[in-house]
Length: 324
Image (cartoon, rainbow, N blue to C red; front, side, top):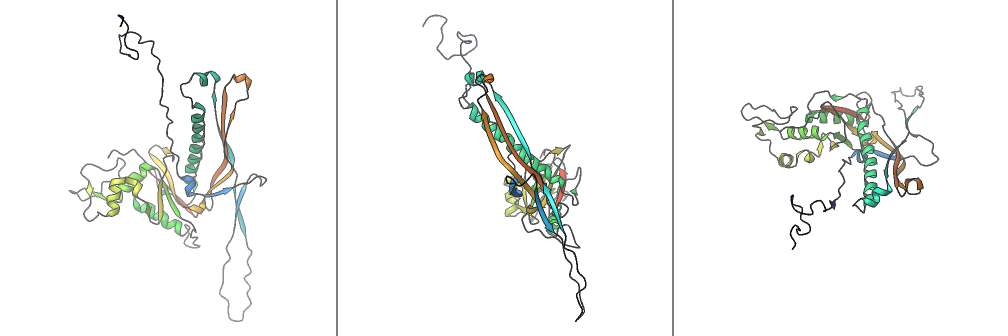
């Protein structure tokens, strides 16, 4: 082997041909987004072509029965009322450009297909985030508050309210499942408080402060059960149901300061109306782009609440990053 020539492929600093070796990326990955769960908790409807711009849910009012004396005519005639709740979809879109030179030079031969997946992911993320933002629009009593740490009683109490439609005079029980949707960091504390952890020296329950459990905690005496052991091993994913509410988590719930607002609600009250399903099109015909490609994805939908003052309660609690 001539002096000054090294084996092909060597890139050790100081040896020959270091600058002649190309850098080629062979592994291509997409960033993961939280796809979320909001559509699984909603009543889904379609706004079909030629049905206008708004979907309406119409509900009739109540009539009240009265006691009447034997043989007496019924004289309490009442007027039947109705009310319409409107849901008007709007478009959401995302676009990106791939130049012709980029596509010729890039080492990824599947660039367009991966970019299509990225466009679809952006639509999915926006769709779920909008659903999460709807949780705070319920107008019944907000459970919790800024800086408050979640407890099992908050969830159970909110579920009890929803089960009678937040109304003791004219109860309005829901006909569908009840969901509790929380930020994962709030659910982490909820899981810990369901075990429960205790301080063996002081016999207090320190778990649940903003930072999470503290040093020295252990499962309380008599608190061990199959569910407790599952919570210890799997965390908030093992909660399942609390107070007749199905507990789910969604990382797309926004956090303001350290607080996040989820909700406990009946499925029939969370409405998702879709006018146009997700569309993805590539425009390859623009000659001025010189072989480039324009990727477009769009959808038309709207989120909203039905009977929002009756069938759902916002739940505002701490969502700090746990430290233990």
